[in-house]
Each structure stands twice: as C-alpha cells, then as structure tokens.
Image 1 (spheres, rainbow, N blue to C red):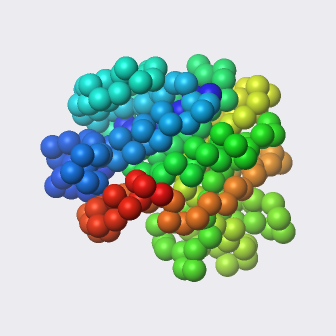
Image 2: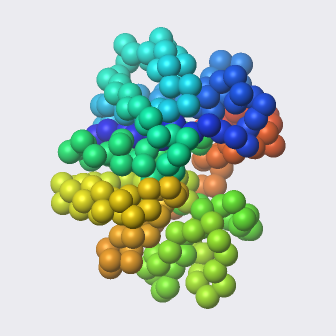
Image 3: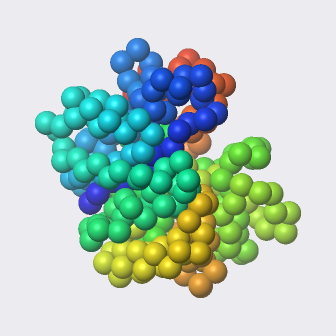
Length: 248
C-alpha cells in the first residue's frame, strides 16, 4: 500500500511563516513539522510500504528534510508539480496517483493525523471500495469540506452550505482507494475530469464519481484525531496540544 501526500501548495494563509519555508515543514512543536507527523505514523503502519510526496513550492526544502530524517525507514518518491502556482490540488493528485497500481491513501499535506487513521486502514477497512474518512462536529465552519448525504448515500462534498442535504461530517482530507478495479476506475475518471477542471479542490474528483453513480463510503473517526492547519490561528491551537496529540 502506498501513501500520497499532496504538498505542492504555497500556504498563503500561513504567511509570513511560509514566505521562508513550505507549509508542510512548519513546526507544530520543537521537533516535528506537519509532514513529520504523517510520515511517522505511516512508517508505524503495518501496510504502507512507500510514500509519494507531490511537491511544488520550495520543493527542494521538503525533499531534503524528508530524506535527511526518514530515508532509512521507508521508500520515498518525490513528484514535482511544475504548475503548482497555476493549477489546483486536483492536478497534484493526478500527478501523485497516475502511475500507482497498488492500494493507496491520499492525504492533505497541511493536516496532521494521529495513528488512529493508519490503524483504520491496517485493521478495519477490508473490502475493495473508495473510502473517505470524516468526523461529526457539533458545528461546521465555512472552511470545512462538508460531506452531504441523501438517505445513507453521499451525494456531495463541498465547502458550501447546502440546506437541502444532511451533513454526514467534515472530511479529514484522507481518502483510501482499495482494489484494482477502483484504482483503475479512479485514475480514468480523474484523467477525464482534470482536462475539464484542472484548477479546483481534489475532492471535486469524488463529486465527479458520485455524479456518475459511483459510491463513496464514509468512515467516521473522532474529531480530535486530526487537525488541519490553514491559518496562524490553527497553528497556535495545535502547538498547545501537539505533544498530547502525538501520544494519542
């Protein structure tokens, strides 16, 4: 199984910090950056044997950091998105997955996940399918990538509020593609979709599958098991509890 980390963006909302370093290398405590959390937990997984990182902005800094800290622990592949400043995360996703023929996990490079996520894919998700991991919240924010349903079926994934649909949860930006049929299907559909909309959120590729009557299965996890770091405020919050989070 492979992990694909989307880490090409400029992290504009974390400026001025990201004027000097790429967002995945922003420190959340004294010793660890955002991407370090993901890599350490992936290394601890029983099934992940390769990590693919799609880089763009300050790509050499990310590559050098990862190789220096982790190259003796797991196999890495770095994919350069030369259009990182022009095309959206969905293009990074395409570059990251187009040559993969094994089961794989997609993650956002600006989110820290604790080991519970990797325990899910190791121990609980057994059937071939396309899964998205999400969390229920008491209140959903404008910036949450919200997962909507009609009945028990996912019908839309969007940051926008849609009153006519039920909110199943907030996406953790953690998607699992399992089984050769689903791997080929997702690759073919994504290739078609990016030729029409190359500059959008990668979750829109899942909407395209849903619109073509393909099922995306939600898997629920505790809201405290992951933290997306978009702003200085987000960073301050996680810095206060990063050591506790790491031990969960």
